[in-house]
Image 1 (cartoon, rainbow, N blue to C red):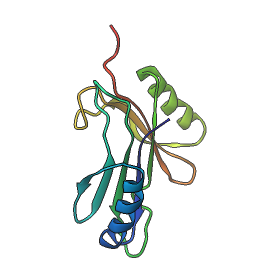
Image 2 (spheres, rainbow, N blue to C red):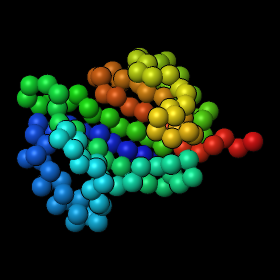
Image 3 (cartoon, rainbow, N blue to C red):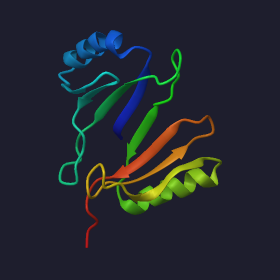
Image 4 (spheres, rainbow, N blue to C red):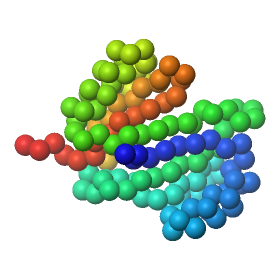
Length: 132
């Protein structure tokens, strides 16, 4: 169900040993490390969408501001991404990115973004090329 998740921490250097330990215990490798971000697992691609990925960002605001919270759900098709977006808008959500290709991730990355009633950022994604 989950494709990828992003969470926020107040201090990435302080958080890194904890996340390295708990993800290591689950045999999930750290694949990205920078001053403001950690990444664990594997990102999906058009030819292989069977993975999950966790991003941990340092908050951009003073204290712990949950500014990078993000949940992405796998969709079974591009039309399902469109339906996800339309249903969210119809039930009080706000558009945070209309359905479409996001080629900066990979050429087939088709996604839509919404903010729920409490401001949480959610996404639906389909990774594969459409069947012809």
